[in-house]
Amino acid sequence: MKKTTQYSKWAAVLLTSALSLTLTAQAFGAPLQAGLKPSWTSASLFTSSVLVPKDAESVIYDVKAVPAKKQVYVHMGQNVPNTTSKTKQLWYVDTLKALDADTGKQNWEYVFHDSKGPYTTAGSSVFNNNGTAYVYQAFSDKTYRLYSVNSSGKLNWVQSLTGPSSISLLKDGSILAASPGAPDSKGIVKTTLTQFDGSGKVSKRQQLPGTLLTAQEDRIILSTSPLVKNSAGIWLDKLNPRLEVYDLSFKSLYSYQVPAGSNIYGDGSPGQMVLKDGTVVLRTNVNGTGNKLQAFNSQGSVLWERSIPGSALTQSTGNGYVVFANGTMTLYDLEKNTATRTFEEEESKYTVIAQTGDGKLSLNLKDNTYLLNPTSLDVILSFNSGSHNPLMTTYGDNAVYVSSADGKLTKLAVKAGK
Image (cartoon, rainbow, N blue to C red; front, side, top):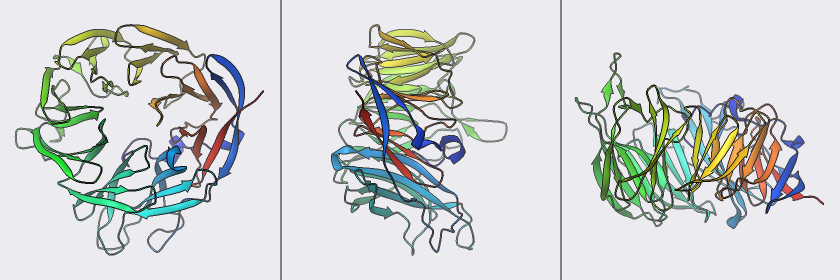
């Protein structure tokens, strides 16, 4: 998760009543009574130092349960006030920490700021299920690096990048870094795509026209239209760009021109979904008529189109996708509606549908969060999340992990009753 998301502030994301959660569960279609039992609460992960004052703003960006290694990773940053003349930028002491999943005790931490080096100013992370963490860091001296840290907290490798970048973990286990250049006088951008294998070796590097929209599964999608300058002189994305779809060898498979009067940005839900078989599902907002989903096969032919409400939330399930609107979630495969579930509860201010690390779906509504089977929409578990939105909640190893405002992590184990 990037530091710059709208959910970085604690007020919007924290669970303050974690120990009073209740739960009902459903497995294999048969309802079971169950409970969330607190297993442990960690010590505060926020640590003061010479650089970080005791009352500094601290933010947890991402929590990742790694059952295979019996660990829980926390990627976090602690704000450092600009009290020196060395930098005028806001910066963070960025840290990756691993907690023992059985006890909550800290196993190790990896700090990305070198006390003698430049300051860390931005970052994001992705995690492999085998316990390897890949963390991008931007520094105050305008250098950019990609780190691979193993499940013991040791550095596997670090590689330099050409500029500010986004990182993605792809279907073949490789890591893609996309580093866009500055637009030229006509708004044309070229992006350097660098693909690393697990050992840190550069397997491919190529500069391509456009900016990255998404890299999922085995597809890389770029917007190749020039940027548009607004009245304030700021370059903005073209609302109906020309798209270029590549495979993992950076071979262009097909292109698609989004029709005039359509917008692929700003609907608050993933605008591009790539399914496991390479099917691309594109969401567009068509002026005056609402939203539309279109599916493209590997040759770029349109398989189908489907109209959806403009307020709908969408999310890939890997082999299909879901649409949530007006309290009802509908599951689709590539051909038809396969399941429907209606929720009586209202949406929260920040309702989202997300995929958990093990491929399930989570949905947070006004009072409760639901974990759903992605092939049937059966409710695996649901729990009362209080008045705050549980956007910092992760599921794994039959447990829910929640963070609190004082920087503590609590493991709530799923225990089925009689």
